[in-house]
Length: 211
Image (tube, rainbow, N blue to C red; front, side):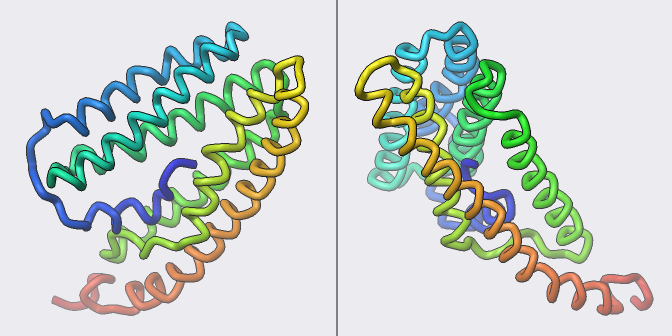
């Protein structure tokens, strides 16, 4: 899904140019969030063309808000939260919509949600030993990239024409690569976390045995 939870805390530590909330990039991110329920409603109704249009507009605003934020030094903590949140919500909406229409199996949705639960537990354990997050891993980014494209392309593949025929296998290829990389990134993050958890649990300052 959209940015990995384990990486998000580290990404939040990047240079913040402004603490302002009302900026052009943040407004664009807010508009992306407003589009999520509209997008889900269109998928559930079967209005795939309009759903893909909303998704395309979301992708354009996603590109613009990042470009504007970096170009005009408008990177903010609010933006760092809104942007990955919008990515995740669009992926979740697409998953729910496609599963509801039996285009993808519910067990695939469960597999992705289970990975989220595993990462959430891992983050909670890390916070207990004073570790805020983990370094960003390129495998997690690659997984997010694949999943961001997989399900919209599968949705495009439902069109009863040549475009749909070509898009469907491409979408599923993105999906399987994305799922595989998503779980691989979880394993890699767990490998990074275990030494930190062992070190934290053995530290007197952290386990409360001194001080």
